[in-house]
Length: 161
Image (cartoon, rainbow, N blue to C red; front, side):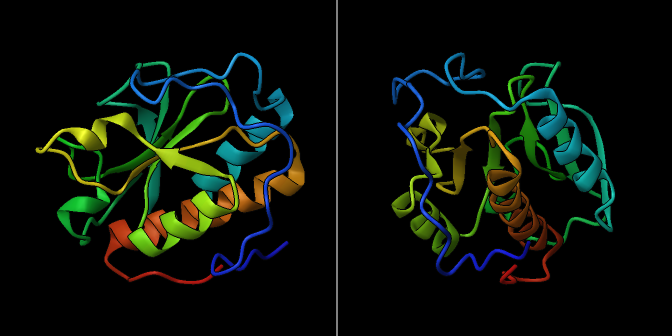
């Protein structure tokens, strides 16, 4: 399923409980079923130019998404790395670096909220918390966001997916 990130579908159900201050690594009340998280990981690992491994900026159990040839701007990467553009936590909760125009539409549709670390002056304002996809329809939106994040990190620009 192709998702147009200029007009993503609205996310259904309540927003996951986050404090807006602490950095949530798990959504205990909303999470990805194991098959959805496994498919997300398989799809990301199949993306051209991507490799995965333990996150260098988060819980080491989180799986980092890294670009092999990082050409994007500083704000495309999770500080202090220059290749990690996102990661998935064990619950399926994602931390992604996204172009600002993508953040705006995904936030309005209920998929993301700003990562609290963006309040720090030494961190880019492009970090979001993308809620764990709960089914295959939500997985399609998550994968579209990950592709936009990858395009940003690879320096190929924002592509509508």
